[in-house]
Image (cartoon, rainbow, N blue to C red; front, side, top):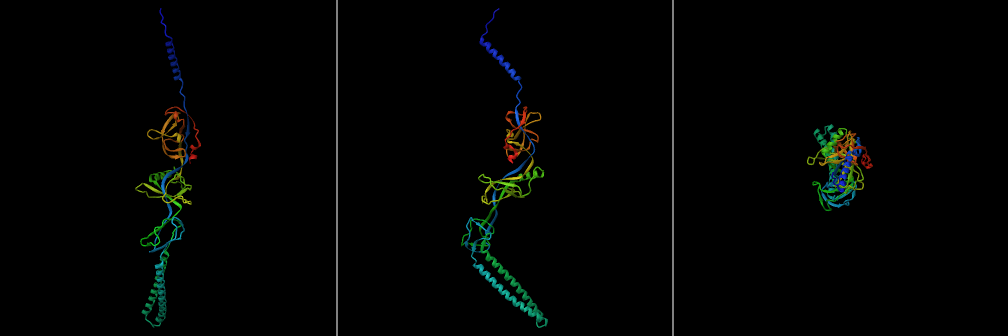
Length: 388
């Protein structure tokens, strides 16, 4: 019987293959490790409902000072851009023609009063004479009528005097409000007319200030529906707080209050005007500034919130969250969000109270994979209280 000698290198390679195969079978037989994830159990939470709107500032009072009599402007008595008081004289219009008219009206009044004295005396004398038939009844009636006419002429003359005095007073052009005055539209020597209502200057009250914001009618409709359904509570009319962000990105230190919302929708833009009022002691706000406002419209006491770590988006851009089902397996849920509060998404649909949302270790799991759930350890900034 003949034996062939097998090379040593071949025996070594064959043994290695056998050993590796055995190890592979042993490794395949080992159970897979169940990943541990941190979860947040959803519960109804009270969160503020806010709106981000844009708008522009406007003066609380905007008074256009216009000419009320015709005449030449003699002088200007204010500094452009300065503060003026209510009743302060701003311009002086040449009063000479109106002084003459007042004197003429006073003279006409004196003449009418003298005529009245004569008419009254004649009527009194005829009253005695008509009783003794010394004068005719017709003459007495004429005397009484002349007396009444003289009374009317006195009343008309008094009205003329009053009108002349008013027009003379209009030659002193005064400020109707207390505020900051703008650029003068006329100079000394200019001719102004009451019929044309010549604009002379504008005075604006800048403390407080109005902020006129624009809100879409759709957002307003959603807000009213949430209030009617009881999902949203407000603190009453005209009490919502407003926070203002200026053009340079800084937050205005004073909080404003919502005054009213217009009831008419602009057909060209589909929006309504929302007006808020702000204190402006330091004159930081000027008319016409572009601003952004954050309005606290109410409180949603039954909101569900998910920390930002637990929300992602699929390839279509839909917001999704991974939850741990009752069977202990991970499941993907599409959700509908309606904004953020702090570091949390406010969820309108897709999850319910009691669901366990994965917020830690989400990269370790796939839908349908068994997981071991444990309470997540989140930073304080992720809490709703911190965001609110």
